[in-house]
Amino acid sequence: MSTLFSKIISGEIPCYKIHETENFLAFLDVNPLAEGHTLIIPKHPLDYIFDMPDAQLGEIHIYSKKIAIALKKAIPCVKIGIAVIGLEVPHAHIHLVPMNKVGDLNFTTERKKFNTEEYQTTLNGIKANL
Image (cartoon, rainbow, N blue to C red; front, side, top):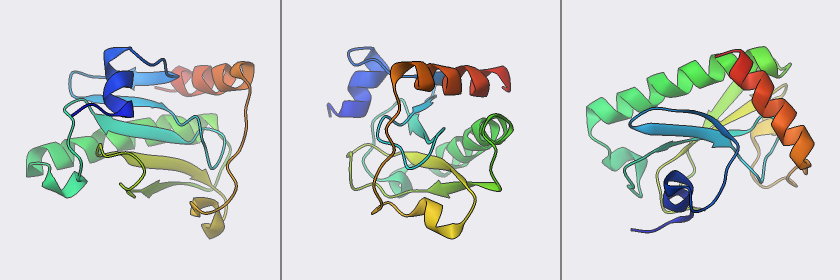
């Protein structure tokens, strides 16, 4: 199954890559709710996160925790929110969003706009805390 995310994994589409392992990739969302909004995806394409084998489902959450800790150190916020929506791209993924209030995790709000330099600064800050 070819998706936007599989094209990012293959390098066909560039991304602001935070970190990757053999099984997972973390990168900045280019349509973010907040500065630092990060996507965590499995490298093996699968549409529905709850179709993942138990071990892999646990691994993606543990991997997300590692990224969330670095994200919270880089972006001033109260907490890092986590969401699994799964409707916008047919490839399982987790959203990590810096939050200061409950409404910060509202996917119906207008998305933020950042330029390349701002994305790069955010990316460097997160990477520095891994």
